[in-house]
Image (cartoon, rainbow, N blue to C red):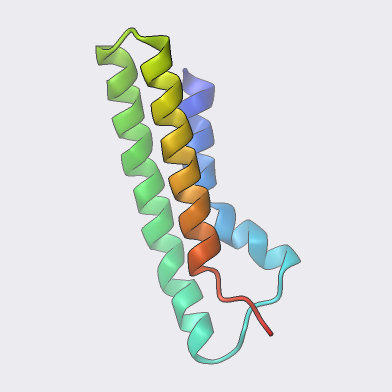
Length: 87
């Protein structure tokens, strides 16, 4: 379970990792980049905490797997949507 919680937290740090491989658009788009990083990291900690308590409360493996998938896809999707790609 700790590896799953850690994977949710690490998905919040996906945007700075993308910066190393994909160029960022200039000027106003870089402001979006700077503001989206703390939001995604904070959201990843909140979702990881929610997943941790959900696993403690529910013993259903199916429910845990579905919630993990939804949390990870949410974070990855938001990181890709908020990322200011260069033209």
